[in-house]
Image (cartoon, rainbow, N blue to C red; front, top):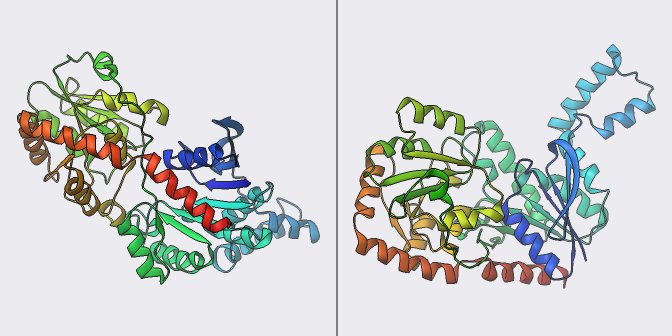
Length: 403
């Protein structure tokens, strides 16, 4: 079966996407992943049997190009430029696809497809069009409430929510990342609750490593607090950095990941003279993350509910901590609360100020019995929330969709 996947990811492809594709490849399917349409350059390569294609958006629109040829409009002329402005206004406000979505559809039509599987809202409109054209099943994988991102203007949020509500009714199966977001989508869009496939990590052996300690000159008995993932604002990461000033003498913060906010954090470290307390590892491929995670003593999820996605989060790092048998500390958010209540692998604390973070981290590292109990909970979580379990859910969805 030819499965065509698409995602807007143009920096690093989400581990969830690669795992889903890999699971399908292992079942004998051909998976082509169109990963990013605003990449620095056109690329084509294979990763673990997955054919991956990456594209550069040309800022044009094939529909307008056809019109320009038909009416002999010369590029650069005033008539051409005026027509292009009018066309763009039509595409953005009236047409079912804007120019970027049309570019995605054009690229998608270049491939054979028996099942179409698209990740997140920007891919949904062109996917609905292609599914109609090719008469193939469409699976919509919503990694979040896309419209609810705090950085989007309110008018844009309303527009995206209305559009997603209309389009999701045209898919053959919808998937999302946890029961809370599934419930919200069902209520707000008046649809059957999407299937839930969590962002679980593969259950690989727990590694005995000292990669972080060797990199930063830390001793075996030093305590490492680990943040990993995308480094951006609105995640509370700056509070962890500030908290490091009040960590106990043998406790250090390591950040693994990258993002535009990293430079701001590095400046903060320099201003607060925390260079011997806070270390930046940089970004690593998903396949290399597990060994680094295994060298830490405690993970941290500092999200603090700035929007609904943040409040109802079930981030990749939660599951990467689980398969590494690493306890974590976080704010008391709904899904994280459920995980801690079920497995006992984390501490829910006040992480809304640097002082509170430092106090919670120091108290936990100073309580060996509590740390041992959390470690036992992390071992239980490893057995229950991993990709072996979640991958089977994906295959069951495909079985239902394809008959």
